[in-house]
Image (cartoon, rainbow, N blue to C red; front, top):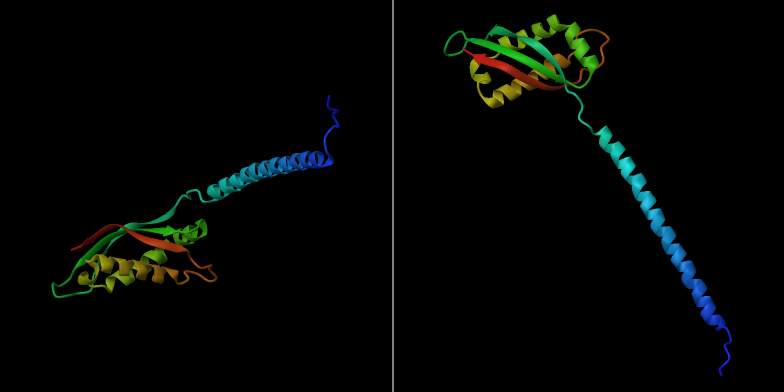
Length: 158
């Protein structure tokens, strides 16, 4: 009968090495899974920060303005405007100074001719001019106003 010697030392070292490699692979896999969970939680936090913000609008009551004379004589503009603003401070400033806001807009509109306002490009340009006119300080000192868009809710040229 053959005698059993219990194995060679090379085989024993090979087994120890395989066990260590298996443990290292398992540890790496656990680390990856745990790291992925942390990443998804921070991703959720970023998605929560990107959630929809409620827009802030300042409604300006409709008004009628005599336009500058053109080839067809005296013309009228009836318009209603809402301003989309970036923060509540801008909304409060515009609301507190509404008579000044309306006066500035009336002065701007009364210098326009009907032919300038009837095209979509003319309305877009008018919106840019409204932002420029209202960006000038209404009182001193005043932080800069954050007016993001001018929305014409009613617009009739007659």
